[in-house]
Image (cartoon, rainbow, N blue to C red; front, top):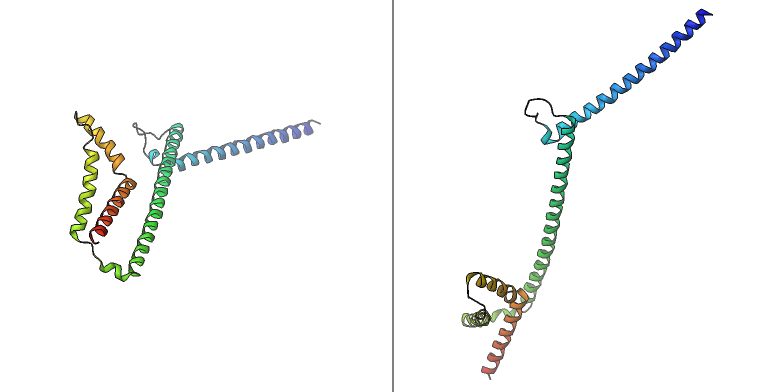
Length: 188
């Protein structure tokens, strides 16, 4: 019976030893995988590729922190690039619309050959320019010029109010209508 007990004990011991050895190997594998992961992370992240000031490898906590910071930086860069890409797409759409409009204007002028022969004289162009400038000067002469800061604030307000594309468009259209009326009236 002693033989059976000793066989039982040795098989139990060897079973426990095998389990402990298997556990130790599994733990070592896990640690090796973690170390390999940290080494790979340190190789991938540019800010982790240097050693610290004492010449030692960076700690795992430092590698993780620098990796987090680098990922945040990459996210910010990605967001910025997406915003730039969207702005460029909008600009491309606007330019395509403008191109289409200009192509339609060219086609319209090509379809009316008699119209292109009528040239606008330099005198008429100057008259339009002078009228536009006179109108703008009338409104500009009303701004306050007491001191420099008041002048600069008034100038900016005046520009924002009077130099909007829509405002300038309306001003030029009105002037052209007035000139057209004058030309028709003078030709009678």
